[in-house]
Every structure is written in structure tokens, then in C-alpha cells.
Amino acid sequence: LDHAGFAALCDGCRQIRTMDLVGVMTFSDTHLACMHKLGSSLRIVRLGGCLCLTPSALALFIERAGMNLHELDLAGCQVDDEVIKAIMLHCKNLQKLSLGYCEEASHWALALLFRRLKKVTHLKLTRVGLVTKAIVLLIATHMTHLQDLDITGCKEVHDDEMIYLAQCCSGLTRLNVRYCKNLSAELLDTHLLEMLPACHLERDRPRFDKD
Image (cartoon, rainbow, N blue to C red; front, side, top):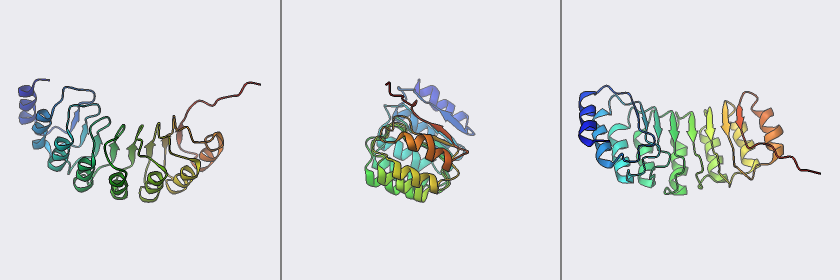
């Protein structure tokens, strides 16, 4: 991706509302800096898999251009506490957030973030190792308006906190719990379906033991 061409695009198209750069691994801090001037128009920014972006560059972009964002995808990016803090302070209108594969942020920072995401209805935490019982309970307590939650591969999640989540977030229409190995068949086959009848549940295929 040519830097000069991208800079010209950002200069000439100041009304861009969506920037989808998922998987562009050559997208750099210098490219991202060109998007600062689009803060007044940007509503959707997808940077999933942009591995070259540093945490400091991400935090600065969010500070400069995050005020009007409705959707932010940072799955697979280098998300640390600095980035989490920037999201908390500057993304007040966020409705959809993806932090999949986030391993550099602290448990403390994520806990603070989930207390403040008052407008987020879609949350993707695919294979985030820090999603523990305490984090799920925080999400359930403070994000009761959730419609879509993806915790694929979060191995520290158990039945009790998922029941509490279902009780608090009764408006869920989609819940992805694939590869959450500590969730029982009884929970998946019965309890969640009864508590969230309108929710599309994505789970591992049931296993049947052979006699």
C-alpha cells in the first residue's frame, strides 16, 4: 500500500465514513497517521490483522479520530493498556468493538473498559486469554444492553458466570461460545436455550460417546 497514494486519498476524501483495512499487514503507523484528519467523518474503522501498527500509533489515532466512531475492529492488533485507555476516553459513541486475540492488555485495563462501554451492543473477544470469570461477570453487570457477544476460545469461562450473563443480558440475539471447553453440555443444550430463546447460539458440535 503506497503511502503517498493513501495520504492523497485521505486528503481528497474528507467525508469517508468507513475504512476497512482488515488483513492489510503492510499498513503502517505512517499510513494510520494520515487518517487522523478524518476524525469528523469516520464512523467505522476495521484494522483487524494490521500487525505492523504499534500500540502508541493506535492510541494516538483513537485520540485524534475516535470521537465519532460507531465501530472499531482491532482484532489481532497490538492492543495494550495505552490503547484500552484511549478507547475508554475517546470512543464515547462506540457500538461495536472487536478485540480478538488481544494478549498485551492487562486484566485491570479490560475490567475498567467493560465498566464504561455504555453504548456497545456488539463485543468480540475471540481467543482473549484474559476473559476470565471476573471479566464475564463485569460484562454481564455493566453491559446489559449487549446484543452480540463472541467469546470463542475463552477457556476460563464456566457455567455459573454464563447463567448470570444470560440473566443480565436478556437481549442477546447472538452468542458465540465455540471452543469454551469448560462449558457443560447441560448448559449449552438446555439452560442457555431456555433463558435466551431468541438468541442464536454458536457452539461446538455435540459429542456422542460410543458404547
